[in-house]
Amino acid sequence: MFKFGLVITILIYLSFAAIPCRAAGSDSDSRLEDLNLEELMDVEVVSPSRRKQSLENIAGSYTILTEEDIRRSGAKSIPEALQTVPGVIVTRTDTDKWAIGIRGFKGVFNSKQLILIDNRPITSPYFAEVLWGTQGLPIEMVKQIEVIRGPWTSLWGAESFNGVINIITKHAKELEGLKSVTTVGSDGVSELLIGGSKISDNGNFAVYGKGGYEAGKNYTVFGHPEKGSRDWTTGTVGVRGDWENAFTDELSFQGAISHSKITEQSPPGNPFSADRDKNDVNGFAQFVWDRSTGVNSGIQFRSSYSRTIVTLQDLEGNLNTFDGELVYSGVQTGAHLITAGAGGRYFWEEFEQGKFVSVRNANFSRFDVSSFLQDRITLIEDELFLTLGMKLDYVEDGEVSPQPTARLLYTKDKQEYWLALSYANRYPSDWVHQGHYDVMYNGYRYFLDSTADLENEELTSVEAGYRRIFDDDLKIDLSVFFNNYDQMVTMSFDPSTRTASPVSSLEGITYGSEFALDWQALEWLILRPSVSVTLQDFPSVPGDGPGFSPPLNSPVYSYKLQAIAALSDSLELDLFSSYLNSLDDRDLSTGFDLSARLEWKASDKISLELIGSGLLNGVNDANYVITEPAVSMRLTWDF
Image (tube, rainbow, N blue to C red; front, side, top):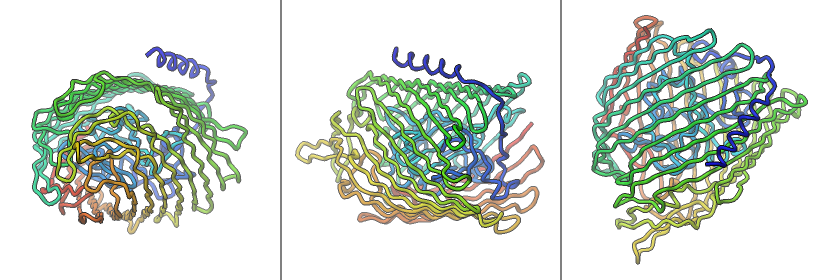
């Protein structure tokens, strides 16, 4: 703990050493009906540079869901909103559980992408996954979601193995007034209240609270009917305060506490569920100081503390994380945009051992530190850019892991060509090293005996892409990728002792492409079709065996189409359809899905939505099928 306190003290001292000067720039309007496609390129994005910048001149594959995109998707949760993103597969595996994968891989314990809220990692450092059921962030609080596909290791390190999802919440000044959102439907009810006000000429404060209930989902799993967990009750309260002056500084504080209670009765495929009542709690507090020192230049200090009380079958854990980071970016000698940073994370866990699930150490702690440096070099003004970067990750009692990236971008006449080469070297999660539990393999029960003798997982990635704006009504985005994985953790099964062990023996390749089109087909109609193809070849994956976010090991074809229609000034109709085909040696997972949203704006302050999801009982990866469609009515009232 002393080491972490020393790092934070140094970071705070360095942040005060920054020299202020007048800032330039303003926030962009995120409402799509007010923007043509060229103006959309001016929407600010945070993730690719770790500071606000335009969407243009990014040498990578990305999708930005604005506040308007999220609203018109009809999503009632963040995983539901992510379903519309090309290259992202979202599986609801139980009433309170989701599995999210980017460019392959699957599983609730999917450690292959980094997920953040306002740059705060919510991916558990111990389990290397996101406990979505306890996050509690209302979708109405989200300003935009940035999905960066592919590894951005020079900025985010090895945790961004397959991509980064950064969820940006609304500033307190955007929450002024009182808002009520009431949802009633076939799957449950919820109520959200948001209140915000000015507390000074430069300061704003907001509070929110949400409560909800879902009766539970029924599933078909590999062709068999199963009943999911029942009676899911959730509650969240949160606060946010923001202060900014006209020159340099922005200060932000936010915090929330969420509670989740459910009677678990999970379908097969969720090995850490039991027939019992489960109570989980999640809370966090975060402070951010952002100082602008010029156009595209500045320094930011962020620190947060989070605490989660979670149950996995009969194992109860108390998970604590304290982290801090300092990030600087600035233009040097006119041709170099330097981004650099350092940070540390200390986490400690306390477990009550279960009979069926346990861990090697009931009291566990670890301290991680990292630093990075990235230079975006202008080779030809306004046309050719080279980005070189390196991040160094250090895990306590481990080795320093380098994470280099090189990216090349050429842009001219509303066209962009980009090429990227990345390498990632990641320490397997402590859950892999520490966990003890039963797994099913070929119809038999095996006991998982964890070991600490594992190698770091490695990824070498090559990506390329092309973007073009043909006119104000049409934009295309194409990317291709090739990933080579080595020393990935999988399970080895011993039939003689009926034990399973984690081993660093999985290697293979993933390659594919993503194509997305944004087309203003008519004055009142926007069409967004996308196609994603991912092919994987991992010869050493145990057949029918569980694993640690195992690859699908089969071609996966995903087709999505979103239609956004303004029928009149007060009436909107939005449709989202998808088709997924996953073919391997064992089974064929093929199916359509359809969601629909109809909104009537009774006035500037009152709107009523009718939302339907799962209308075609779509099939997704892992062969989970929710058997009943859901229909909801959502009333939004701005007082």
